[in-house]
Length: 187
Image (tube, rainbow, N blue to C red; front, side, top):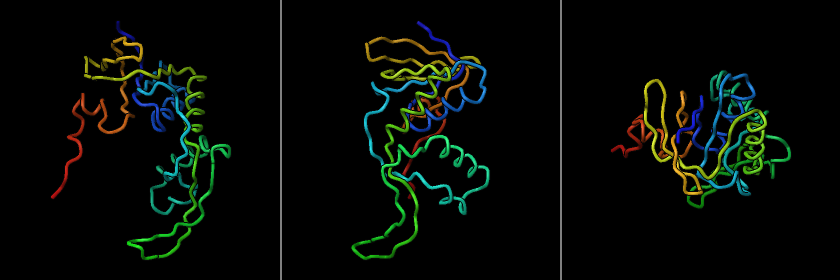
């Protein structure tokens, strides 16, 4: 069986879910499909990874990237997803207290935030399928084909004009299309 879509996004984490929502909410004229190998949208995850405040990165990055980050933060980070606000960072190296500096960032309910973004994407018309694993992707004519397995044991091909690998390293898209040579130790 072959399923057709205009855009296929592999990976339903922060990047893939946000892109699906962005496309359907900003007038993309075509079908958007997001697949993820996890069988549920997102289980509860409390995450302390860097989710910066609006001004944290401003002095360090270009204006265009800053504007993209600012839009992303404003559209996704709502008060209900903030578990704790971090105001200071203490740097300790080998048991030596190096110092304290202002570092405003957030501890977030990542699962809740991603679920919300995915629900927005679905409400905007994106087709989202969990429990679907991309096995191999290849270029085919002016598009791409990905062989996928679903959690029920089914196997089928998704044919698409645009393919986005938002899955973690090593990306199935990267491996299948040979986009990069992967990470190597430099000596």
